[in-house]
Structures are given as C-alpha cells and as structure tokens.
Length: 95
Image 1 (cartoon, rainbow, N blue to C red):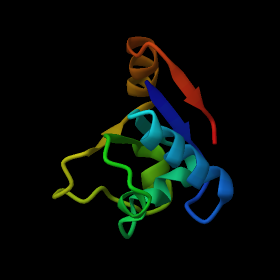
Image 2 (cartoon, helix red, strand yellow):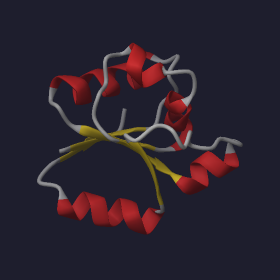
Image 3 (cartoon, rainbow, N blue to C red):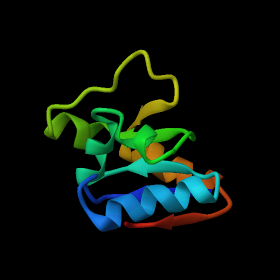
C-alpha cells in the first residue's frame, strides 16, 4: 500500500497522510508541497519508518535534494509513480 501526500508538513492534511501511512505500515509518495517532509527529519518526528518516494520534478522545482545518507528515501519520476501505483495493491491519497 502507498499513501500519496501533497500537503506541506505544517498542514493538518499532510500530517494526517503521514500518520495514516505509519498506522497502516504503508510507504508514502511525496508530491507537490509534500516533498518538504524530507527536510529536517519531519517524517521521523511523526514516527514514520517506511519508504518515502519523492517526485524528482517537485523536488527540483523547490530546490530540494534527497540526503544521500537516508536509505528509506528515493527519487521517482512521474513514470515511476505510475509504475508504483500499478504495482501496489492499494493506493490512498491525496492528503
């Protein structure tokens, strides 16, 4: 299962999406302003321990890069997002 999060970390919707993913042991895909969750340990602060996928274009547009030391975060393209959604049994979003 994956949960798609498009809202920023300072919004109730964004936090709700991450908490749902945490509670369901799901991975998340961060799109639009959701990519800001990768800054300053925001995901870890909410207890999320799964894999976080971030859209490359949204990261680039916001001047962000994935920390190479984090093993549970991965860049994906829009094509990669489509592949990910078709491979998983359930997709929940957008928060």
